Image 1 (cartoon, one colour):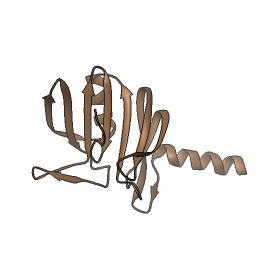
Image 2 (tube, rainbow, N blue to C red):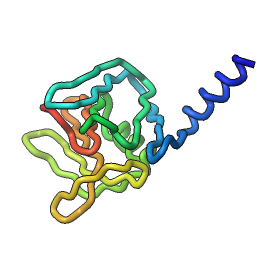
Image 3 (tube, helix red, strand yellow):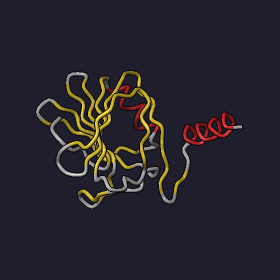
Amino acid sequence: MKRFVAFCGICLVLLGIRVGNSVILELQLPYQASLSVYQSFRPTTTMPYSTVGIKTDLGKYYALRIDTIGNKKTIESILEQLQASTLQHQIVSGVQLWYAYSPLLNIKKILQGKKINVMIALSNNNIALGYPLLVGSY
């Protein structure tokens, strides 16, 4: 019975369960990534993953950051998994930046009158993803 309950719990997590207003979304990445959550300007926790669970309401944290390797195709896959629409794409000093909005993520910021909650930077096959904005250097 304990195994069945544990199995059901894992299935719910994998499907994205709703806890209050929060949902845990699974983001599949082709390479291992590090996940950092921020309570201040320093990362509180950093752990390695290749499947990352994103809690849609950050609770006591104000930002989440995922660092991995990849290319534009990897970013397109991430945006597709998040059902995010790209609001702006630009290149600044050789770094490609995407600003997007995902209806699956609860927290949003307003930038130039538009809602955003996903920011992605690509530089030399290094990807940094921020929710709701990218924290730290990239």
